[in-house]
Amino acid sequence: MAGRNPIDIDLARVERLAAQGLTDEQVATSLGVSQSTITRRKRTSDQFAEALHRGKVRGIEEVTNTLWLNATEKQNTSAAIFYLKNRAGWTEKAAVSAEHTGQVSVEHGLEDALAVLQRYGIDPGEL
Image (cartoon, rainbow, N blue to C red; front, top):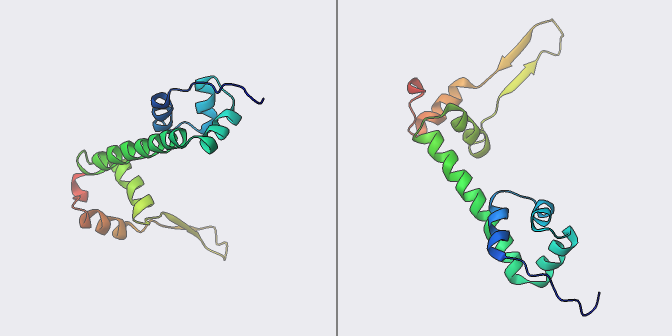
């Protein structure tokens, strides 16, 4: 609608919602506006687009820092494995014989994983 006054949206709230990992659609629902309003605001308001971006970056940063602390200082094995899979390329591969002998061979690359942990200063014996 031409001449319609834009809805006031609290940019600090937009940033907080984005930092919590909400999608644009979820942000719209939380603010009580349509997704098209969010899309339009991102296009027409640099301040709005920046608030969304800052929030998303802040959320990723906070979770990354928490994951890092859990993997290193608290020696949380699950956090360490998640970190290594996503940052060090560590994978768990299951290999199945093509001959269908009825046996399944599983390769975990345990020695490689232990070497990576040690390279990052984590003693696998303490996990």
